[in-house]
Length: 380
Image (cartoon, rainbow, N blue to C red):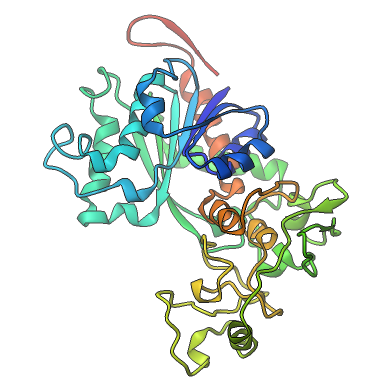
């Protein structure tokens, strides 16, 4: 089945769907540097490097181009919800990122769409923004009489065998009502467990990065021997692994890190640390899960990102492991760009589950179906 990835970033969502057997035909990403990483790892996908406003307005996409549309319009685009969809939220120019995602869905008419966003989207403006988003996809007038059934799910990475406490809101939209989404969710989990018995097992920081060893100047190290089920799941057959570089910290920062033990943070330093993060100068614990990997995982003041033993922050490869990227995934660009790519990505293990769920929805609900106009459609 064909997939279109909007706001693709480096391709975490795309990777999960590819692993599940989908053909990701097109992806859209505004940042050329981030798009370079996507192309490096998804060379078969047509990467469109452009503003989604241009994509939406130039007729690039047509009805039937994809069975599934995936992506997460950045939450910065959401503003105060209007009194009504057509006169407020959907027409507010500040919400253009969401609006163009919606327009592509409305044009292509996929059987399923998957929209990922921050957990806090449900409480923005007292929940009104979230209600407007759900209402937009469910409005028959906006969708030519064929609205989507939308199923919101709070997704916790730790429940998918990902070693971090990341939480995200996922909206799963379907053209046809699926009935019991909870049952399909459970069946998908059971199907994956039959193929990968340890897929959903809890994973610690040690399980994830314990075999990586010392960093190198160019980030290239010999392919380490996998010792845990999680490491084996992400392992590759290449001679070397990339992106295992160390950030150069100032002597002051290094001294501070040296004084922080496992599980502690800036509060033990007895000095003023200017940071908005409560976990600033926090050191990870080998036997726990990491907090959410953000775009500032290379900065001690950015959160709890200090290596469990060494006086440095996580390397990009370590952060990628905690995000469940496989070892043969190569990140390109500047240090800042790579941190942004990894921190903003959807963990591929979660993406794989969502891909399998979408397949089950299409198989169970659509199959060989007739749309409202009487035209036979092949859905899967």
